[in-house]
Length: 100
Image (cartoon, rainbow, N blue to C red; front, side, top):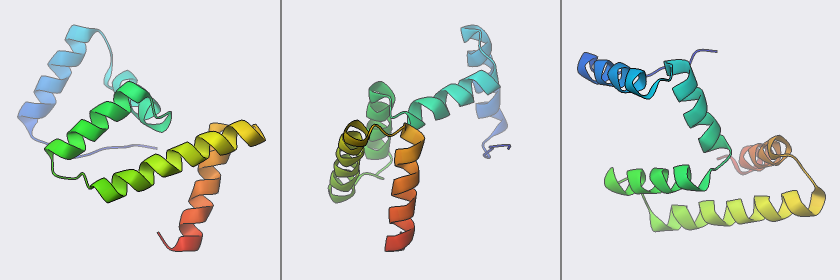
């Protein structure tokens, strides 16, 4: 599957230069970012929180819900010995049931 987005040529050029400087490919960069996001890496999630605040995408009520879901998923995973994918599947089912 291909994941993409649109941006300016200047931004794309800057990205390529920075990636070359760091010694990683676009594929490695995006896979790493997606992996960190899906694993809810604490440092990456802190970056996401700051990004949302900077872009005015942050709402305290929504963040409380997200934090509560994370806590519940952590507790469920520990109690039932579920994998991250299995927990994610459960939340997907909950979202479908609730029409989210």
